[in-house]
Image (cartoon, rainbow, N blue to C red; front, side):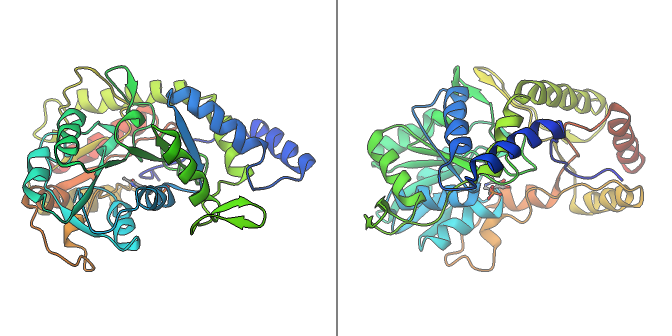
Amino acid sequence: MITATKPFSPPLEMFQDKVSEIFKNKWFTNHGPMVTKLEQNLKKYFNVPYLVLVSNGTIALQIAIKALELKGEIITTPYSYVATTSTIIWENCIPRFADIDPITLNIDPLKIKEQITSNTKAILATNVYGYPCDFDEIKAISNEYGIPVIYDNAHGFSTKFKNSDILNFGDISTISFHATKLFHSVEGGAIVCQDEKTYKKLLLLRNFGHTSPNTFDGVGINGKMNELCAAMGLVNLNFAEEICKKRKSQWLFYKDKLSDYPINSMNYNLTEIDFNYAYFPIIFESETKLLNVIKHLEKNNISVRRYFNPSLNTLNYIPIKDECPISEDISKRVLCLPLYHDLTVEEQNLILTKIKEIC
Ligand SMILES: Cc1ncc(COP(=O)(O)O)c(C=O)c1O
């Protein structure tokens, strides 16, 4: 069986050593030494001014929206994982969708501009598959209209733009360390911001609003990462470079082998971008073709993921319907090929052979 994703598993003894330390300390959660160390190490790894670890990438988005005190419409991308939209609704804001660029699959700045009204309070954009949004254009819009930008950078571990980590863009940027991500802490996430005032707010929001054991400032939530997850993160960080290197070679292998086939894969412009090659999406000519390929792969014990599907503007709980024809079309025809650290060249070849049998 070839699965769509598989978590990176570090040597068990390395994780066991950390777990032994946790048991010795008897400190399982509430900002223990593992979380503190992982926060320091990731801050250094990303070279960001402020970083707050949280329990997952979804709560990271919720806390980001809370920290910016957003109430009203947020312009967002229809092409992302459901959490990008559901967090907006969960925080009692209204998502307004701006369609995507058909080449990068990221939100199109021109479409953002078309959606701006006096009700617009912010932009929430995803760096889809780890590829940066058009940061310069989005920054110009943000400045022109005086609205903040949140980047959902769940996929973007270790991508750089103009030599700066991708997390350094926007007012707030979030990341997921879910087990399926390039770098993971089983469950986990982080929020990055650029100023101390926002950082202090993030700390309060993550921890029930505690300013001391018996005093509170505002409504907070439990967004804390626990020590076991942080331990996994600390161990996995030792392998980050190796994981990224392998991912790039696997990505380029797929790209090369598909080059003589009528199958669309991503043609990224990598000028000024140090890309993380986290996912390998392919886009078929029709949904029927995609469904036939999935059926054939499943018959051969290969599972793939329709990622992203559906287009988020079509979710049944969206209060205002916005049409996004590009996202609606692509999300019906896209799937991500298996891509994870343990995937072998033989498995990649088998996947490609089976796809080519249908295409
Ligand atoms: C684009 C995007 N945003 C948000 C999330 C949510 O992250 P988490 O699963 O850590 O809550 C994910 C997770 O897969 C994602 O892909």
